[in-house]
Image (cartoon, rainbow, N blue to C red; front, side, top):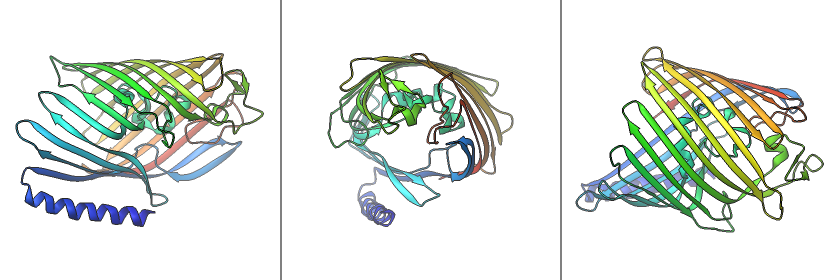
Length: 357
């Protein structure tokens, strides 16, 4: 698989290089981020676990390009894959093309990050680790791609920008089999940033027992059948606020998600508050962390996390991070991509490095 992907990339690069020579106003860029670390998880399925992974960054390989069409109108595209350094494999991430104009905005079509991914800079979770993702990723504020998506972003008007998206229902989609729709409004003024997003995504495959560590959801006893998979609809409204001052970035986010599942009448509501900050102590050293509280029906999760980054150069950094989750009574803790804990607490610590190019 990786050999075929590499061959496809080389062919694309050679073909586009020829096109670039013929069209002086075309641009082509290969970029990416690689990361690898050693992760220690306490109480992963009732035991401690040591593994190689990368949760501090989301490693990727991307090919982006554009062509001038006259005036300020450009054709744009992006093709990217997630990169798993530990296994040497790739997984599809984004593949889209579109039109971009400073006057009219940007319209893209394909597989790409949804609008809720724009909330990432307003939540502390993503700055530390994917392990700090809000429980079950119910509000999707950590950044997720959707297939069959049409997305529009307006130009900036006096600090304001709006966006909209629509995703077509496709039975063979790997992200969601139902339709997706959303709208966004953001504002930037000097050190202040604000954001509001509403998004609805139908047909998301979801396993409550392994993703949340809860005994029941929607009135279904999932503890008796931990492998129960639901087709879930997630309707999320979120607001975020961030402020930068004296080397600090302070951020806060609130999300409200209405949940329903195909074939089930009962609905649920999840609410999450996330606060955090980071600071560059020097040009090389950054520290940061945060706290989130998630409530769903009678369940709750408290998460705290922190990280230290040390830059060896403009592209290469070392990192150390830690994440702790405490689940409510009658629940079992479970951090993202980890086995459900035997008890109410689960913690993880990771040390590693990243390289951007």
